[in-house]
Length: 238
Picture 1 (cartoon, rainbow, N blue to C red):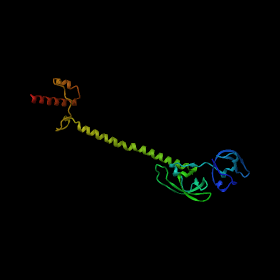
Picture 2 (cartoon, rainbow, N blue to C red):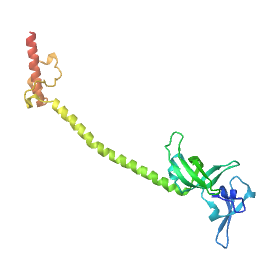
Picture 3 (cartoon, rainbow, N blue to C red):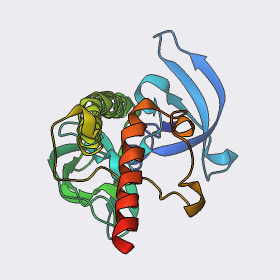
Picture 4 (tube, rainbow, N blue to C red):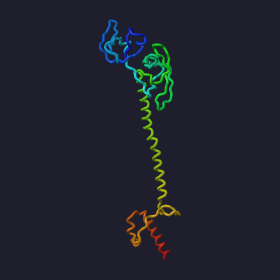
C-alpha cells in the first residue's frame, strides 16, 4: 500500500506517494470518513500520521517490465519518476501520448508524454520511469489469453493439413514400386529383364523341380528362366 501525507504537509510532500510499512490503528469520524494511523517506510515512530483512507491510501503501483508497455495507454493515471534539481521523487501523472517503438536487446524503447498532477509540467519519459496502476492487469490478461488461443489454433490446424499430403506421398511411392517389380508372365513382352534373383551355387544345378515348387507360384518362371540362361552360358562356354 502507498499513502499521501495529510494537508499539514507542504504541497510538494502532499503530492508525493510514500510506501506504508504498517497500519497501526484506525478510527471513524461522525462524517463517515475512515482514518488510519500509518507508519511510512523508512521513517520512525515520530513520523506516524493519521490520514484519510478514501483520499490518501491506495494500492501500490507496479513497475513496468519491457513486455508490459502495451498496458500503458493515453489517459491512464500512473506513478512517474521526476528528476528535479534538488530531489528526484515519484509523483502522480497522466499519460498524454504514447510513441511505440520496436524493442531490441536493451528492452522497451517506447516513449510516453506525461503531465504531472502537482505542477502540471510535461515530460517525455521512458518506460523505466513509469509505474502502472494495478487496475491495468486485465489488459495483460486479455493479451496473454489471445496469444494462447492463437497458438492453440495453429497447433490444431497444422496436423490436419499435413496428413493428406503425407498419405498422397506414400501412395506415389507404392505405385512406383509396383510398376518396377513386375511379373513377366502377367504382362506383355518387355525388353527389360526381370529383377535378378541370387545366383544358385554350383552344386544346386541338379536339384529337382519339386524342390523349387515349395516356394511361391509366381517365383517358378523366374527360377526356370534363370536355369535356362545358365545352361545357355554353359553351352557357349563349351
